[in-house]
Amino acid sequence: MTLRFAVFAALACTASLAAADEPAPLASPAADNVALVKAIAGEPAARRPLARLRNPLCLTVAANDEAFGRTVAERIMDNARAAGVPIHRAGCTPNALVTFSQNAVEQIAERRAEGHEFFRRMSESEINAALAGRDPAYVFQSIEQTTRIGEGDAALNDGPMAYWTKERSYLRTPQDLVTTLVVIEAGAVAGLSPVQVADYASLRLLAPTGEVRSDADRPAATILTLFAAPDKAPAQMTRADRAYLRSLYKLPRTAFAAEVLAEAQVDAAGDPQTRKEGR
Image (cartoon, rainbow, N blue to C red):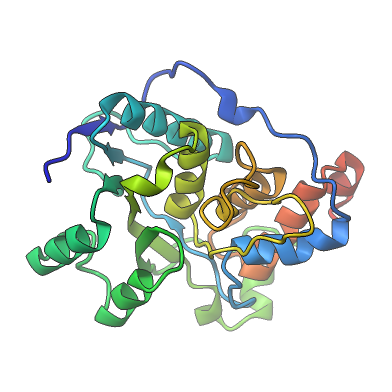
């Protein structure tokens, strides 16, 4: 199947900046945010940095419906800007790709056999693990460690040089997201809004994430439940979703996952005084 490509790299302006408008604060108690943001991040090891884009975002979206692809791409770009993700200027080489396929597994197998650049830095076990996901969306992220040059002296809670004096240096080695690919079964998005699809793709494209189960007893608190329970999924990213993305790109690259998630919990709680005091 040949896909028509809608390619966007640093749009000068978009039709809407709706991504900057947050939904209402979560109704759940603040304590629930701890487990929620950890689940959104995929239950990461606490004492390792989380991966984020090494270079500014250069996005490609491929879809049979060009208008749909354009809408999704614009929304993803808006979400990236709202989270503080650097954006490439026009003419860049794509490092982020979202495709909608009638047969995702077959398309992935073909690209894998061809040695597509988005798979080259991934091990066979990593690719197989991505293919074993629950959702009709397959996420492939090529992650590399990057030697720190002039890093480690950013203040975070304990003052300057805390990262160097309190931790073994190798623990603080940044994890760079070199390329990131999300392949979604085209049939699975029927009945979903482009905003929902774009918000789901944004999280899975720009950050380490996990597949979050849907709780039948309460409204979904993250857009990552979109395919698990589409009838109960939120209309857009929730406060916790945005808090996680903002925190990931706000803190130093050497920040541990535990520190990113702690910042996201405070942000998700939505209490300006608590945020100011750093609790």
